[in-house]
Image 1 (spheres, rainbow, N blue to C red):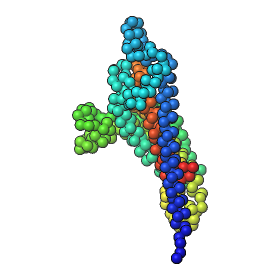
Image 2: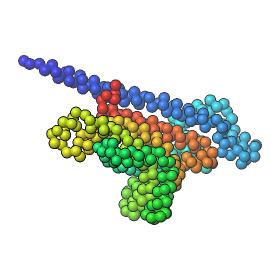
Image 3: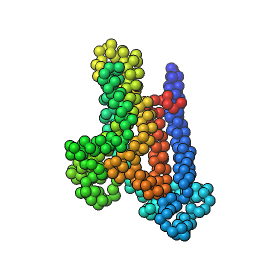
Image 4: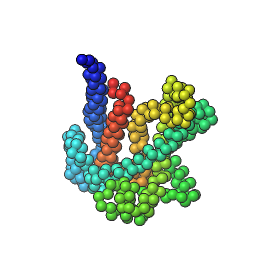
Length: 357
């Protein structure tokens, strides 16, 4: 009777690979905790360099006795380390404090305006991918020719041009001169009124408009999203384009591409299928790092287009010197970046087993 010795070996290898993936995921998950802890600590103490938040926001606008009373009531006259540990405990409970200027729970602001920033980021990523993938493939295939040189210069300009300048230019051309698109906001007056009456709103206007079944509102939301999405998406598209070009050029020189060409595979299929797919792994990894750039760019984009998200509110609270609100928003952005990088690491490990080791 023949005994299949290979089967246990294959099963052991498969189990080892699966165990390697879960071990990698567990390690990356555990590393989020010290990362977030360090970020929260840095933000807390950097916000206190100029003194307590009450003095920063209301100093010079209240009598000295009233100002000191407010500082005492808020507990900002206690030792700094005690304040830090209390804030840390509040963060773990989901309590980021209360804003000084408008007396709102910070968590309420994060929930209300965070969805708007998420919606804008999704639109921007879609724009970035729609622009960078085809142009990056063209640049790789036409390497060192005029098309490649033109696209590389364009990618550098897209990345290096200040986002507020791109936003103002888009507004001037498409909103003022051509009058094709709205100048600012997330929706027109009627759409804003409609959204204010939505039951259990998601905060993402497009989803809420689709839920209501209002076609006019859907169109209006998308029209308002075009300019800010393009302004923010071009920033990331410049990075993606150069990355796609570099990696596809590397895979185009591989033996399997040469073999496919010798078998008569079309150039279109070689570039878009055979060369592009292996080049995706480093691209996906870098996409996680671009989330930080998107969120940083969202501050200027939202301010330029009056898109009321976390970036817009961050700028408003900075102007008001409301450091409690600023602290909460910055911490939330840091947490989002850490979690996004964790998810991207998992996707990269699932695609390429070499990432796990």
